[in-house]
Image (cartoon, rainbow, N blue to C red):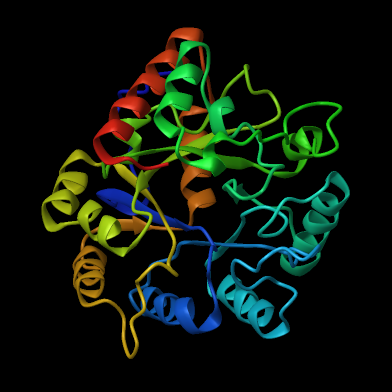
Length: 314
């Protein structure tokens, strides 16, 4: 498999671009205008959801699919070509039984299991998260870098067989792609040319993908600046933006102006604008799912640390 070979995108497109939107703090009021805008530009991306309410007195971090109006809106997004992804069972820690109920609920609503997901840092059942994202000496480095950040330091237990929060055996069966590292590069494929990849050291995830950092509107705009758009196009690469559309994209009466300007410019380019799983499926069909070697794993982890030190992202 030649990972350095330039990808020929469908229909003669010059590059690929999509977004994975973590659902934190999302409500109809603050994210629906963003999706109306993207739909009007003929861009199709991935909107993650929480199928269930947190329960047990946990604070609400955003709307879940147990809200009928919100659920109806996400189903309409799906009908219009957006992908609905998974951000965990709920906005707080969920037991194995609750995870199964959430996945069954997701399948009942959307007609299939999640094609793509991202862990939620407030969910203890997150899989291979925190220090377990990385290996050997890199775990010590990760702990040192994240020591003030309590969610990053907590034990995430979804992959620990025998633990009450274990659901790894379910993840490998029911989730196709899971997000791990985010990079400062706009061309995600250049930062992580092996994606989608399987890591034998983390066997409960079928395939991982990377993303480009844009957690809130200013970081997002920086990543898709004019010069970065043009570089992505000239490289013939692929960008999977990681963001939270509830973090500053929708202002009181309109969308954030710079975001609108940059996305309008991007949409006029000859890009392939499809949801995350569609893009990853295409890469897998072209090159297969890469199986990481020890050297490949260490190289990817080192690249992430270098990027993290520059930007401070997750």
